[in-house]
Amino acid sequence: IEINLKTNTNITPPSYGLFFEDINFSADGGLYAELVKNRSFEFDKPLMGWKELNKNTQNQVLIINRSLEKINNNRYAHIVFNNDKKTFQLMNEGFRGMGFQQNESYIFYITAKTKTPDISLKIDLLSADDQSLGSATLTKIGKDWKEYKVTVKSNANAEKGKLAISFVGNGSIDVDMVSLFPQNTWKNREKGLRRDLVEVLNELQPGFLRFPGGCIVEGRDLLNRYQWKNTIGDINDRRLEINRWNTEFSHRSAPDYFQSFGLGFYEYFLLSEDIGAAPLPILNCGMACQFNTGEVVAMNELEPYIQDALDLIEFANGDSNTKWGKLRTEMGHPASFNLTLLGVGNEQWDVQYIERYAAFEKVLKAKHPEVKLIAASGPSPDGERFEYAWQQLKNTKVDLLDEHYYQNPEWFFKNANRYDNYDRKGPKVFAGEYASHIKDVNPAEGKNSWLSALSEAAFITGLERNGDIVTMASYAPLMAHVNAWQWRPDLIWFDNLKAVKTANYFVQKMYALNRGDKVVDILINQKPLIGQDSLYASSTINQTAKKLFIKIVNTKSTAQQVLFKINGAKKLNLLTEQILTANNLNDFNGIDEPDKIKPLNNSIYKSVKSEFKKTLKPYSFTIYTI
Ligand code: AHR
Image (tube, rainbow, N blue to C red; front, top):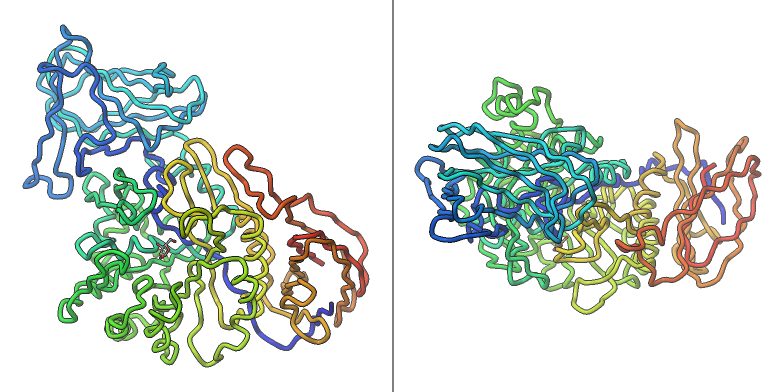
């Protein structure tokens, strides 16, 4: 196998980024560290997630709607209690339980008012079998709405814990925004994100963060579409929205799946900045999800959707003299978020997309030529049925076309050459959602097996080779709660206490951290290595760091000896070998066996010649760095 360091191209490998969507309880119940489900009683069933203990005529909850006074947070709970009849308790079940870590502190928040000031609230962190793991008391609650908080420490681990609030005394209290957060959040931000999960994202050194989806952008109908303006400002006033994945369409239906928007657009921008990723928001383009109602807005009513896009650019980049830039500044971020990428719609394969996209493009390109637009109509997984819009867009000057592929491993192996013959004058490609699916029981259900990861590793060699066309790529979906998922495979699995990195995660990480800035030829018999002898490869150099990366995938069940020949180097130093492999193609990392597949310890060879032999392990992905 020959590597030509002097290859005369200026091809940069794609930027490897993250696709984040609130699917599989990734935001509420996942990344957003709130432990209380339905904290402000706004779910369609107001006490969903809550249980009343010792309820009777003198101990009960009444839900009050004050929609004229609080347009986005209509309801609160009026709680009456009389302790002669046993202590009244409200219990919250969390998102498939609450995760408590031993010796960690949790902050309980409640917005409340009472006319009976001598009452108190006892807060208990409970284990799954109702043992108290820590408690605290709140007293001196006043007669006007105010937020109170108290810290509780847990004396044990619990993955399926609960929260109990006991109402002590005789009287009544009005409560809203009942919250429980770990104190130890990402960057210690109050009411922030789960530290362990952000750390797992950060470790990937992502080039961009795409948010908030996915189908969630479209909503099941236009009324329930994702509207970024409802997700910013004071969290008390962010209007709850049903989650697109709370539908009969998801084969793991979740009737308790709503979006609190505690993780909203401001927090997405902040997260992007924290992890060094370029922010990439996707906006609704006036079309609802084709798997639901599929309704589209009338062309003469599209203007507010386009205005939302203009306002978003101002929110991200405008200074404090602008309306939306001022709001960003007031929220705590005077500096611009440097938005340069914007997606118009998601998976809009239908013909109606063309004119809607064109209307967005006309306005946005005139006012913000600095922002690259991503058109949402790559080829559909169903093949030709929906490919009309894609074919049309391929002949236009859109900046980037978002292609999605959820296909089987064979497809990924076969498509390692997918972009080799793409029209170099056509639009660039954003491989915005892809994952290798091995069908299990239902469609779109498969485990994150080693075979799936190996096929992605082989496919990505083709993305690297064609970095002049494919400029960005992200695996999808990113995250899934082990007890609340609607879609699999996913890059990262988690429960209420810990995260699992899949084999697919390690493939992404190996590509992202060994990226190089120029693609060079890696050839067998003078031809790119795309499956000959069951091998797939790509090679890049980092011109400043003077590093050469050789990525090679062996898809054979046996080891293969390879002779590498590096042409064009004056002197070579130090070779590092990183190997990712597994005992079995069906192996996967699960919550009980999270480390089954992980990169082997690096081997380091101090001297290296321009020709060297290596033995590739069976079914393996290897990176040599020289
Ligand atoms: O990644 C899961 C879903 O797959 C996304 O929401 C959607 O864009 C695609 O169909």
